[in-house]
Length: 109
Image (cartoon, rainbow, N blue to C red; front, top):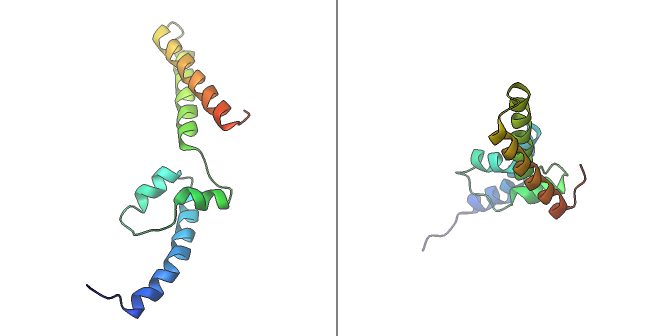
């Protein structure tokens, strides 16, 4: 069994603070927790990204953001194509999903 050197132990103690700063920097650039996780994929981290973002009140719910973006895209499409009934139906479904998520998380629009 291999022993860790003292140098590695010191760097491990500094690593969580450095990782937290790096996560906060990426969040300030507008990345969601999913994208931040992909950016930091290869690095060994012991801290959860969502916990850090919640602690600093920066957390954005990625599923709700994705739904809102999709709804905006569908509305934009429907302004040009008013008789696209399939898209109208899809829009109703997406809005219903968003409403259910908001009720689940008790968030007001």
